[in-house]
Amino acid sequence: MTLKTCMPAVFVGHGSPTNALADNAATDGWRALGAKLPRPRAILSISAHWYTSGSFVTSNPVPRTIHDFGGFPKPLYEVRYGAPGDPALAARVIELLAPDPVRPSTEWGLDHGTWSVLVHMYPQADIPVVQLSIDGTQPAAVHYALGQRLTALRDEGVLLLGSGGIVHNLMRVDWANASPPPPWAVDFDERVRARILEGDDAAVINYEQLGEGARLSVPTAEHYLPLMYVLGSRRAGDVATIPLTGFELGTISLTAVQLGA
Image (cartoon, rainbow, N blue to C red; front, top):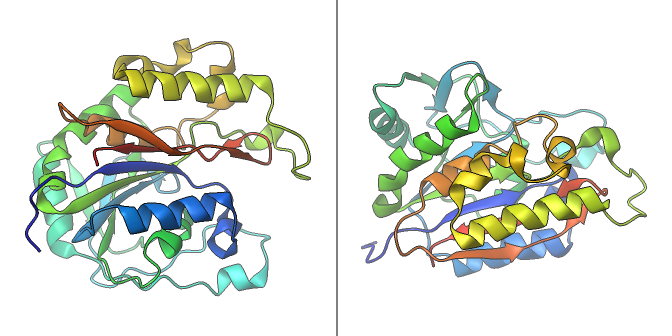
């Protein structure tokens, strides 16, 4: 495939692992994204669920499906997303992020932050997928800078996919899913979306300053940081869109962000 324009970059709020088996507004949105986006030659996923000390990238020719959760229905553990890996892409990621050390890993695979979304976006599992871990010792600005250095991949047919959640507070979820999201969650999600559309990436990096809801919306950073990689890859002329919004369980945002057409 000859690429005439660079690939978009996409962030998704992946919500519950059970979305892998669901048919709802979020999964409809992911399927629509997969149908609309130019077909990538490979996918580099940055998932909230590979949160490490130091940076790693999967180099498996055949990455395993990781069921990194407990207490869910048996059919969820039977899901296998059999996409191939791409050791050459892993090496390219290491090259682009040098001199910062990124170590290849064959111990990890594809966790649910990746496969629960891709099973809807690309159900044939025929596009190679590589995961890059999130170094939890580094602040948001560092992750944004890493995204900037990965921008070249968009010209090489690679879809940058960040998977997490702008609002992700498990301590305050409504397990009955019977109530609307609390005002603080809605307010923070809207503030972040507005800054993204305005091109004010600095405000999104310094999210702690985006109102009183920031502390509750991002009690820990792992679900927010995948957004930094996507925004870091923003290029002059990229149009930012919000292809999906919404919440589940009250305090888990499903907002998606797309950069580029």
